[in-house]
Length: 156
Image 1 (cartoon, rainbow, N blue to C red):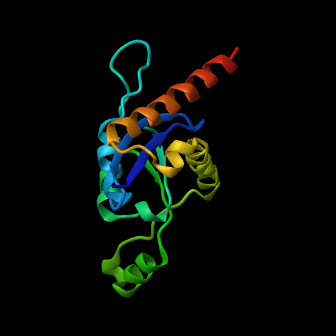
Image 2: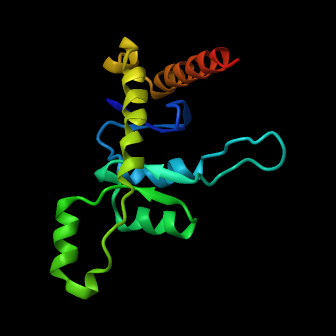
């Protein structure tokens, strides 16, 4: 059985939250469970659970995701797919306003892609040799720990 890795990463490409799902599961439905598990410690006080902005590709442009982000005052840097633009324009005034996209901020989305490329550099993760999802998840977490350790050792 194949498995799929879903991750939230910070602005430096370091993994914050990881979920493992069956291979046939879509990416978009996993976004809200990933966001629900987000906890970033601040040293003092409760951990932060609300990022300032979320960068994602067109696959994450759904009404449910945008509504959830808007209700939590999180900036969505997600482009609108052409089919959704067409549906909105066809509906006229009832279609709502066009989605605002900060194009300069969206250019930083390559951090996410580089994080996945770094993850796939591990042959066992790229080819999914492990039979059990628990073992596969352990390798993903180990990869994240190594990435965080390298980042912490690089900072002065």
